Length: 118
Image (cartoon, rainbow, N blue to C red; front, top):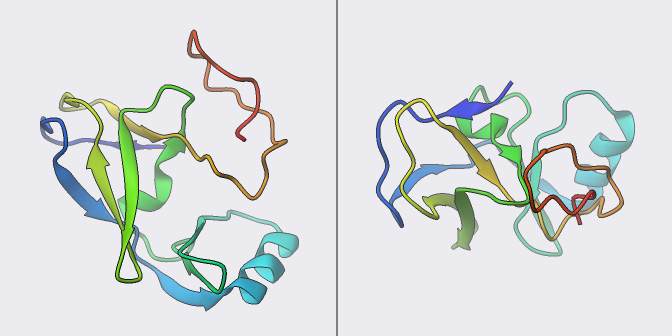
């Protein structure tokens, strides 16, 4: 799976929101322990967004050590922006750092891959 741009996105263009259920940090940890498909982003030390069941295309954005997009948190919401121009049909990727799982193996395959997500 992945998230692919339908149109060309210029650099610095806001293109989407990480939409889903607002949950406590405690609930986020519990859901991660249960396993399955996880798509949770932390807003701050108390709150997270769980987009696992949202159906939002942004919940499928994969990690890359050389991403083409980045996320910004503003007023309790997570927004995505193009880091550079993204071509129509190109996969959208983020660097997941900082990660709750910094030791998790990275398989992005880019030339500058760190080998781990953290």
